[in-house]
Image (spheres, rainbow, N blue to C red):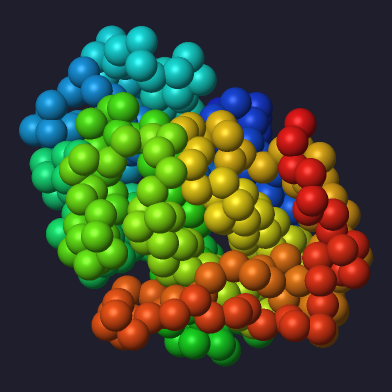
Length: 382
């Protein structure tokens, strides 16, 4: 089946839908994506919505792992123009249960509008998006079949999971950025080496934030082996308990996420200073993740993600602090050093030493504090 050629009016309608729906399905990306240059804003919005459709299917509890795998393959066929988007949406939307939010249900029902935008993009952009969603869908299918309250085998497996559902997004963004900017294209190889940490740091932060909410759904993404070495049985975890062994293991995972986010910060500084919008897009996502890690680190007995969610007031303070510093690497380093000060820091998966020799390393920026950098972090409640 060939892709249906859309008129300019059709594409404008689809683009308007994308802009409208983004705020309903993502608080974070509704804030960060509009910072991008207009050309990139459209394609990254589309990329996010495609990933969100795939993620909605993965998270639907009424679907079996086999059903999810088949639906992901059908969705990829839609993106390739091999299946009609309207037929896909009409048949799949009724399969969603009440566990899926109205916003996500509406997004899936409007798959034809989202895919219309995809098919209006330049061929290299489409290729980057379809490749990313393909890796994500097949990776999610593999892990969905093995999801349980017992967690994943070890940190390496957690790292691979985070790559398939988020690290690959960092690679896709790098391709899009390098297609957009000749200056970034010259640094493509180095940026691609750092890119997976961008997505993996954000994903690992979400895993920690949503730890107890995920367990209510019957899944856990923590590493069994490393937690066992800390004296913690992942399968028997329960929220709200004051357990020193769990608190230590949790700090270790915070350190892994922090290490990935430091790589993401290095990635961001490779974006030319004149591309302030791209820098803001990266910085705000990284900043929100770091602030979330601080909340988790300060409250290891949290019981829900809501308890460690960063308040709007703190988000606004972070935005104000970075907006003026976006083009100035030295000031950004001071800000990052200040906001990460005190967080544990451990090498990411594949690079960590034996746990018996692992210690909490202080972050950089000893001469800067969050307060002196202009970001007030003391009271983060609404």
